[in-house]
Image 1: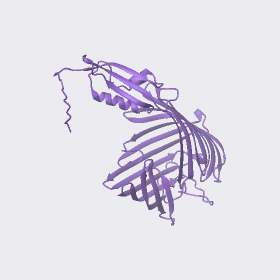
Image 2: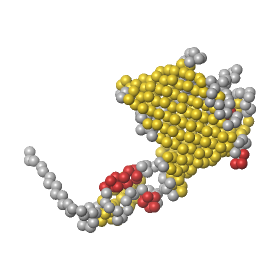
Image 3: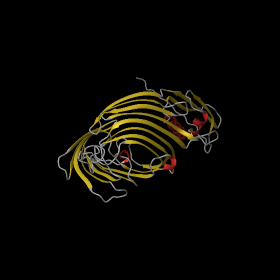
Image 4: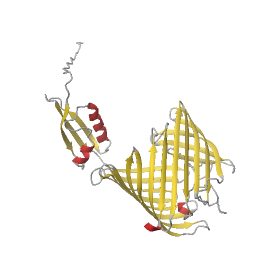
Amino acid sequence: MDEYKVELIYIITKNKLQYFGDINIQNSANLTQELLQKHIEFKKGDIYNSRLLDKTYENLYNFGIYKTIIVEPNFNSNSDFIPVNIKLEEGFFKENSFGFGYDTDKKFRFKAQHKNENFLGDLKQFTVGTKVNSEGYELYNNIFDPYFIKDNISLNNDISYENMDYTSYSQKKIEDRLTFSKEIFTLPNSVGFLAEHSTIKSDLKEYKSGTYLLNSLFYEIKLDRRDDSLNPKDGYFLSFYIEDGSKFIGSEYDYLKTVSDLKYIKTFDNLTASFKTKIGTLDRDLPIFKHFFAGGAYSNRGYAYEKVGVKDSDDNPYGGLSMIDSSLEFEYNIYKNIGIVTFFDSTMLSLESNNFNDKFYNSFGFGARYYTPIGPFRVDFGFPKDDGGFVFHIGIGQVF
């Protein structure tokens, strides 16, 4: 067989710079030229750098609406200015999805959703769907505008209706959460308005059934340094949330609610250590649906769903106005996607505001993990330290 050869000849002129020339954009999607140009990392006259082409491609790919993206410099010109052709062909940006699941907290679950990734153009998103489980159902709608004010303040509006049975009450609630978000020093900051109109049927004699309207302003900041959102193995997560209800904006009650979250994960070879804690408080007693509850597959695993804390004679929990809910877990990877775990969970629930020195409900246990593309399939056996017996949990999704 004859030998095939290719000769490459490079002609290099020392110290001669080249620059980006004209930028030609062909775009079939409903996006303004201004929005596209904000995500192109170079402009005409900048010194040519191939890394800026790669970054531009990445920016456009992250839009999630294109099936074809071509960012191509034209080197055929003898000029020092290199033209760049950008071709963008829109793909499918509407999707219908359905899901089924099961966990020991809510039993069988079903979800149906329609999502439009470019609603009315410029990457606005429109989502509508329903969630159904053994305790009731929820209807929800979300509108998200990532560039509501220029390119650095987003708008998110969540409207939902739920008809749900909880451990100590049943609820029919209409909720509207309007959120404005902006990154400050790479940290997501959110402020907004929350309206909750809830009709409650209480199983607790101390808390009346009735209809309540709570309006509040809220603020939240997050710091997420985990290596993966679905199956983190290293990193940490911090968040702080404050909610201020006020009669001045139409609420039936003045109140202040705060919630702080901490998660930390560290992997050593085949061993992963994970810790999380949630600290919450209300400054006054409120209708039962605003209480903190704990217990279940994502909380204290030595107890059934929402069963931690003081209960009435019919075993209905009161929840709490102050809470510390913590978990420490060690997981050992025994084979590929399979791991075994041991854990210690501890929860304090107090019916007093700003009281973090009440009884702690402790439990320990063991379990197994099988990792899937949508998160780990979990099986846990939890043993409450004081009550005896055990509680069995299964579910899909990361606890940490």
